[in-house]
Image 1 (cartoon, helix red, strand yellow):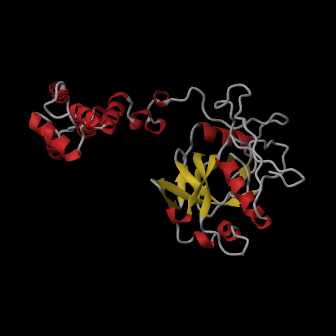
Image 2 (image 1 turned 90 degrees about the vertical axis):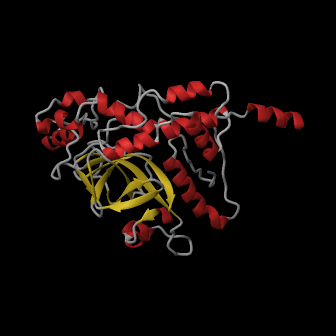
Image 3 (image 1 turned 120 degrees about the horizontal axis):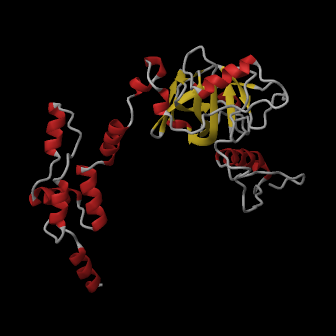
Length: 329
């Protein structure tokens, strides 16, 4: 053990260790921060400039870094933050949104990243109506006007604790009122939210939207409607908002009883589900590899087990839950 302690002591990196002079020289090349010409930015850049071995020693002493990995992380995080570099690259190489927006007379093709625009499934047995073509154009152009058709895609579901949701009125919503336990009490332990991207128009909290599953066709019955609540993802918290325009991501509550892994929301009954041709290659599909039989220890826990399996199935695309006539799951 004494030999191991001696070896670890020898391997500790200090400011005067061999090779640290090269690190010091590299840190003096290039700006540490984005100056921008402002006095505050210039002062911040000066404060983050490392020029002597004493500066480097002070940083390592405060952070306790003494290994190759910890020293590298410490120096880069303090003097060459990745976020600053990425922002500089975006500003230098990407065109200005104001000069590329068609509304400002710019060239929208300069901002094109996706080789194939998002689109809805096209009806195969009937001629597309004028209303459907309007919805299709709104999705393809990401029309964010308030009067544009509202279309959103829910790509997955996930469960979160009720304490993470900042919405005092959530308990009085119709969807929350239906989420009860076996004893008839409100189940506030967890909520099922859908990760949603607004494709066109604007989603609004409290409004009811048509729910279109991936197998919905033009010959399907009129899709069901669900009133939803919208939340912005703020770290580990979810903050309720009244409206989310096209192009943004949000979390949607109120779809926990739909039992679909992904779906399309629309305020128009003649809309169609989002086409998956740009996401799937051929007939490729995620399929489970292992089959496991699960049963409740007590008969009174069967309903709770079913709710848990439903949440797992919605949250993980690779999970399929089936039930036999004998009650096996």
